[in-house]
Length: 221
Image (cartoon, rainbow, N blue to C red; front, top):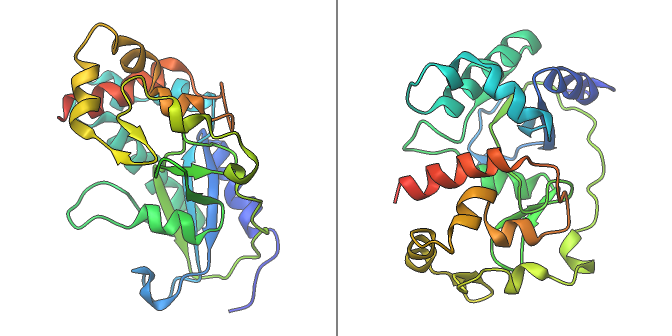
């Protein structure tokens, strides 16, 4: 199907209205695990720093129910899909789970970082995906930018206070053990020190949002 100029910009405008950002898009191949009629997959994540305020204003944050962020994402991105004529996909709700990390790398706007976490060209190591929209049309897509790690001093490699996350891999037990200590309160309350060390997108995410994710991560251990 022919490209429709400006369609991705239209999606980005609609997403911004819901405190979401387009974090990448690509034209799927048969092995990407998407419907054959999908011409373009658009990945959505938080538009920082307004995302946290928008989420907190939603009923899901205030109703004391389980998985508030996933429910907010399903409602908001599902609504975008209905308005824009797309099909919504989410990184939760499995198994099976959709391969969002692979999709992000396929977009050309995210890469594996020196510590193994995904790094995004504008969100850095704080990148997260709340969902994706699959469109039948093949959109015109922007050229990917350079991998930020190639010109970075790579502060992330030495940022973990207990060496749980670095070039050698991820020691999950050491990470959770540190979070159980008084010294771990900094990571638990402000976000992972390794993620915060990334200069790309630094300061865009409010600490309360990072604390929410860290408590969910540590609580699931």
